Length: 281
RNA sequence: GGUCGGGUAGCUCAGUAGGCAGAGCAUGCGCCUGAAAAGCGCAGGGUCACCGGAUCGACGCCGGUCCCGACCA
Image (tube, rainbow, N blue to C red; front, top):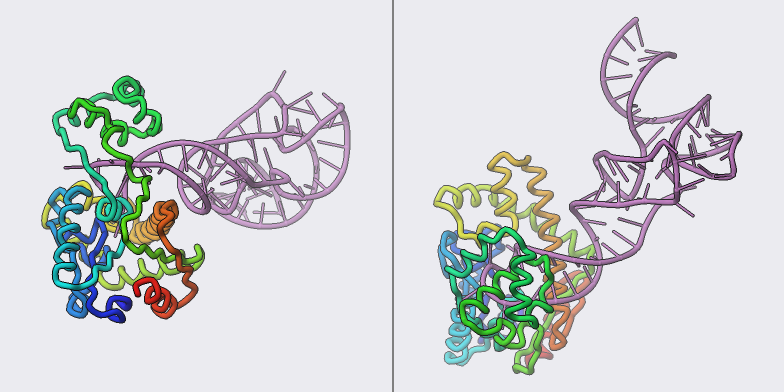
């Protein structure tokens, strides 16, 4: 927000797998109406929490948003968020398609070993890149091999390719101790702002999509409402899981050599501002 | 004061007819093409409460001390 305001003529593209869901506001720390009236935001509130939404949809929504911003003569500032979604937006990630019937059949197979040896036959290259215990990725690779009749590994270079794309990428890094403290404070703030109530209302409107259901905090508080554990336990779990996620985000982005890192000590706005100005000149 | 149970990794706990210890979680690191706030892998970490004894050898056996819990008085 501060960067967008300082620079002027800048619009924000949210790159966040959970902020795309309407009514999930407090727990996703979604920009408020006030924020949005000060700086135009895109890619927020795209679907109902009960609807299925994937990277692929995000790719088309976000690319269109960027085109729109550029067409209006403004600068697009993408704020991430979700590593895979950012890759889908700024790099050439092409999704090979979906074959639900094949998927269903694969899900029926009880043994990962069987699935893995099948992948070794159909696509040895993909098999080498995927760990034999990672059922999720094995299933998807097989789905594509069987469905398309072509090896999954021929889809493209994947998320590990970092071509020049003209995007200026800036990463914000906190030391772990401060990060942990900020996560904890943020979780408590969300609770004070009525997070539990938001989850209650969400549950009342219907069953959430598989993705929305797993959102940090929503999951833990929902389990608390099911009586699985106390509120204090749910909040503690939320803190731990959020901290782990923040570190996982850091690890995802750390690999990208195109990112310029800013180590923040205390005041993000004051410390990031000047450096950003230099990069965005 | 007595009896019984317990004191093992940061946390919760396994364990060994005596041969220098393990799991889950946490932590660190890595992977990642349609669930990605998801999914998966690897690693570090312990004078086994303390002191003494018998034994080639003790976390394990014997004696004592200290702490925690339950019950009894």
